[in-house]
Length: 241
Image (cartoon, rainbow, N blue to C red; front, top):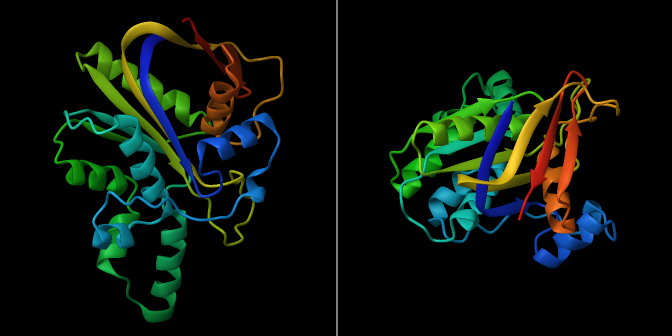
């Protein structure tokens, strides 16, 4: 399985590294995520009321997607993927339901897995196709594969967004990303990039689902080729300038 495409633009957002300099320090290993203050992205382009309603993963998604499109208002299909989704909001809803036997309809509506990308579509006034994936560890690659299928079906470009914000509350037997993040990739037709699913890698499987953070690190370090192993299979990334 081989996908070829061009990445027109990309952007990352998190609640830890914020500036390009901080991201570069993190990527090079000169600083850990915990060395930066924890704060949500500003998302100052959103109306205040809408911004207050959005949880952390939604704000991360909006921030990364907005910067990846860089002011371009043309219609654009979107593929979003998340492992944790709105897990913190869901935990809060469960607590409220047990305590008060009722929940906020607005908060419940925003906890649904495809609600965030729906909010993104409404804010942009974009009626293009949107796909929300609840994915296994290789969420980034699965989302890119879906985006390549849309390109093959005739889309001129597709926005891929992977966003996760692990819950702070203790959960039994859970694996958590090191910090909340979002990565947005604007894909177009081309062959600059190649993504290939391969046979099981001889290296140990990745110990988490945050391959998007690995992708960001490789791009910031200028790596031209790398592999994400997942035990039963692997995904090989390469860029040919």
